[in-house]
Amino acid sequence: MEYPAGNPNPTHSFHLDENFDPFGLEQLSDYFLPGDGFGLDDTAMETMAASSWSERAHQDANASGISHATECKRRENELRKKKVQRGSRVAFRTKSELEVMDDGYKWRKYGKKSVKNSPNPRNYYRCSVVGCPVKKRVERDRDDFSYVITTYEGVHNHNHNNETTASFSSSSNLCYYYADRASNCSNSSSSS
DNA sequence: CGAGTTTGACCAGCGC
DNA sequence: GCGCTGGTCAAACTCG
Image (tube, rainbow, N blue to C red; front, side, top):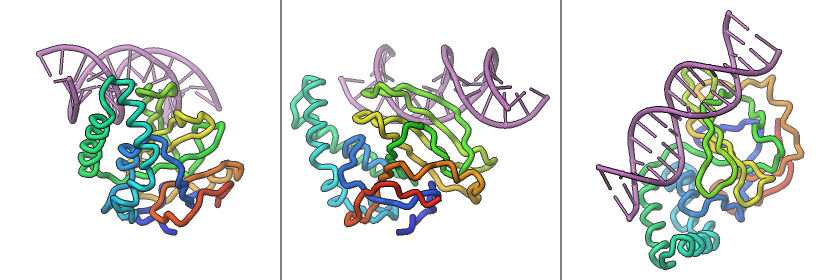
C-alpha cells in the first residue's frame, strides 16, 4: 500500500498492528484522522482503540479521582478537538534497542523533553535539509520499553539520502498504523 | 572550525 | 489568573 502523502520512512514497508495502541484513542486520533487520506473513519478508529481506550480512561479516572463516565466524556471532547487540529502525521512503532534509526534522512536534534506519564524522555528532531519542514519525535513506548515510537510530521520536499539507508537492520519488528485493517503486523520487514 | 547535541529557558494552549 | 504540559529556542558544549 502506498503512503498517500509521501512515505516519511522510505526504508520500510508498512504493516498494521491492530493491537498497537501506544497512547489510547485520543492520541491515535491525533495521528490518523478522517480526511487525512489514510482511509480511517471514525468507526474504524474507535474499533481499533476501543478496548485500551476504555481501560486507560478507567485508570486515569481512578488516578484523578473522578468517575469513569466523566473521564470518558472528557476524552471524547478531546478527541473532537484533535480531529480539527489535523496535520500530516504518521507514527511508527519499532522494536529496537536503538532510539534513533536510520530512515534515509538526515536529522538534527533540537529538543528533549520528559513527558507526563512516561519515564522516558521524548526527543525532537527536524530534517537537516534547509527548507524541509519535516519533524519527528522519538520516544520509548511507555508500556514496553523495547519498542520505539517514532512520529513523523510533514512531508519531505526532497529525496532521501539513499547511501545512508543500509544500516537499519531487518531484525526490527516494525509495526505501522494504517487504514488497511486487514493487514497484520509482521516481523522484520525492512525493505532498505 | 563547523556541524551536531545538550539542556535550561521560554512560550503557547488548555483546564481549573 | 495560575499552574501544568508539550513544543521550541538558543547558548554552551562536544566531537571529528
